[in-house]
Image (cartoon, rainbow, N blue to C red; front, top):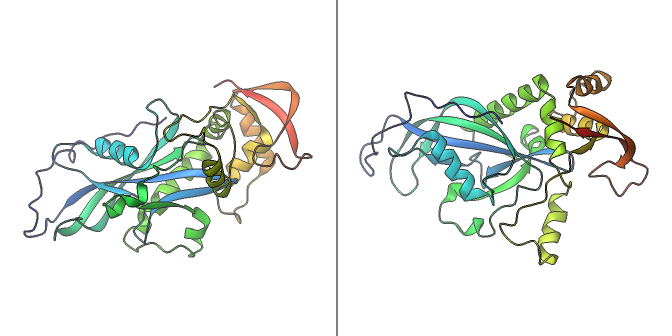
Amino acid sequence: MISPIPHPNSLMLPQPAFNTTPNRLIVTASVALFAIRDWSLWVLVREGPWGPPMRLVLGTETVTDAVERTLDSLLLWSSHASLVELKAGWQEQQVSVWGSMEQGAAVSLIHSILLRASHDDLRPDLQQQPIPSLHVRWVPVAEVELGRQMLDTDVLPVLQTALHVLRSQIQRNPEIVLRFLADMHTMRSVESEAETRQHDNNLLPGKEPQSGNGILTLAEATLLYRAFFPSDEQIDLSNLRRRFIATNTLELLNEERPVRGRETDWRRVSRAYRYLG
């Protein structure tokens, strides 16, 4: 996990004067949450066109505290759950303060976070919360990039920056893909997860999903790597497999396994490896 680096000059601000003249500067913490569903990249965005979840940084907290509170509000998240957290940097945008007349330019520290598989369950009462910025849903990144899911023009650069940082990190360090797969128990679609929650009484809110056993296949690693990038982007698959092996974190096993997410196709099997990272 890459820990966020606090910005020393912007952690403490005086309490804003609500219902008076707008502040010239409001500091916010925006969080772009990504997950893999059906071997495609999804992002958690607010209902409506306003982009990723956002929380104002109050005078008594740091930006990191605001990010953690956003995660606590949005997710059933265990304190020891795995994730990959990538600091995407600072962005300027326009915001309105909910519950007041205050509005103005905001400087936001954007965190892009890749969720561990099966840890992207939302709180069951999320849509009933009174704060509009916490009304969220999962959207395929491809839908945003193709213009089928519209975002506000002021916050679209925030998501684009988070995507750029996430993709750049994956390109530079493909071991992230292997670590993600080693910790992934299953691969379920949005629809199948909804059906499971309706019919499985054992899947209680807050129950910790199962971790992976460290076993993965290069076919899965290739599928996951491709999921981070647009479908029309050219990827040298032979070189990619060599880069996976070159991490020196894989132990070849004398067995083949079905490729997760495609278990219904019995012909889709691949040589198994154990991740040693």
